[in-house]
Image (tube, rainbow, N blue to C red):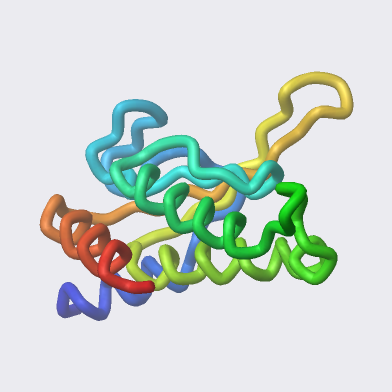
Length: 134
């Protein structure tokens, strides 16, 4: 099977509830990690794309604040949609995406989404593409 077909197959078959890298099978310090997103609190928490992702999210927030610094009512209603659009953009750039639910104590859980690229070249291309998109 050609490499492109293998990647497409892997990309479509995202694994649920796993924080393990699908390429090197580690759970920390993975060279394949593009981005770690906390979907519960709507922030990026790791990976080389973290700064650019959080920067774009901050711009969206700033554009949707009133003069008191609070979010506009319309933005509050659609905040999740705006965030998901950014997440979907990253998903289109990654080779594989995993969802992971983290239990942090009684009644305290977070949903994380991890984005991986198979090669350093794919990571560089994903970062460049994300940074040049407005």
